[in-house]
Length: 254
Image (tube, rainbow, N blue to C red):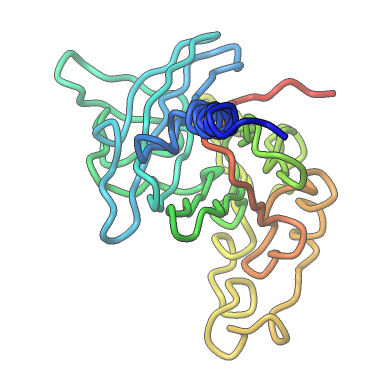
């Protein structure tokens, strides 16, 4: 039988290993978000905290082709991220984006984005309830391929994504074109039609009453890991306990 001193030494080593193996993000109460621009052109990521949550990075910044940046958000944070494309800003940060614009400023500062935009949504857990929830949504339309991938986190952590370019196959009724006449975005059926039936509101405000439309089926067939309409939870909402997440604009295709 091990001596009491040896036993205590073993216990102290085990405790030390447990402490040092705790991810840094968990230890300091922060979650790391890594944003990567894999597109051939610049994107201007924008962020918005939901009610009661701060907006990180002043709400937006520039990310050139091949560039990446990392920043932290607090545990329990809830909000959204979306790409802006075709932007031009002056030295004061004033300008405009072809899609995803937030009032003509570089740093959105709590302003929402103009649709259509591909949206990454997340509600992060807390020490008491550590599960993080996240998704990629096409409910507000599409303007760029995006994915959100956990770094670590164990088994069962899914990838939220719409990695295909929906602008290439957007139905004409949903197209949004830029000044040069190119398809810059693809609206959702809700944005295009504006009725309760397509927006899952009013008498259609329940999963039983609001069913996917022909457009939702098209989006789902092309981007099966993204929300295609408001009640598309079963195959689109992801859960994970990872402390680092990679958000990629124009993610590599398999």
